[in-house]
Image (spheres, rainbow, N blue to C red):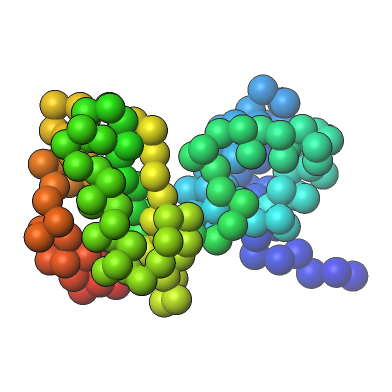
Length: 158
């Protein structure tokens, strides 16, 4: 008899928590995303089986929303706001500095799996522009010279 993987077991717990109704799909995917920092294929296969939702529908939802990722992400997601206020205040310069310091391009993850770098349309913090969110923490009025210290603090946290 095949032993269930840890991902399969945890995903079944998440589905049970929300119920097997199709209307719970987004909540289930959000919890999986929170658990693994992305949506593992094994988890999506388990959702397919447990909730009896076609795989095509699950992938449609998972790829429609930017908050979901089908690729593994680093421990800390670095999101550079590219909304109008942040753009005007120099968000592109922050992105350039982060790419240099992390030695990755936007959409990539560092070799040590510590950071993933992404651009987002708006973080809703326009009065604090330019803004970068790292691991859920908002860094307002950010300048390029503050970035090395901020990244260093996250590296220390491990």
